Amino acid sequence: MNFPSKMIERLQEWMVDFASDAGRTRDDIHIDQLDLRFRPDSTWVEGAQLTLAAARAVADSRSLPVTIAVQIFLAEGTVPLDPDSRLVHELLRLGLSWTPPSLVAYKRGEEPWVTDTSFHRLEVPLGSDWGSGAHAYFQEWYDTSESSYDRRLWIVI
Image (cartoon, rainbow, N blue to C red; front, side):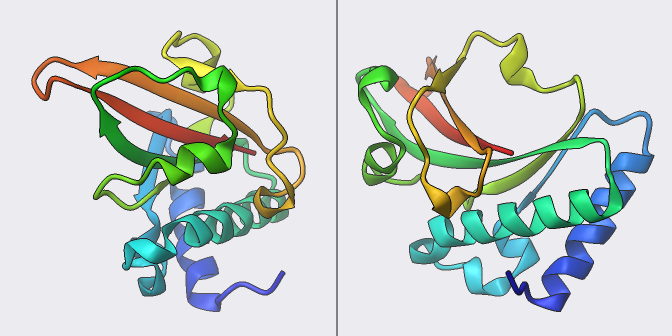
């Protein structure tokens, strides 16, 4: 896959800086900070797919000890969802929040979905759009200040 050179440069800088900082276990960057094409919300899903693939290419080429994920902010709701009955594309159709997706890097062994029970692994195939070996998590919690359920879809490579 051919990625824009500016995006690759920015990803390399961000990922190498993160991987070399022993004090940080997590860092993130919004996809519209990597490429201005991803400012309109109509481009967010495609942008998430592209930046995740580009980040994987950078991590692999530099043998960085990181786990890469994309965090997609879904629209809030007043009723909890049953993630087991939903496919990823169905969750995306529920709508996105006003926040662009974030590319998130974790030091290996620091991934929150391993210990945080708010993450629910979706046992459904993602399809080739997300890359081989990718898997999804759904995260939902009740925000008392907003009186609604806050939701995230995580795609992890």
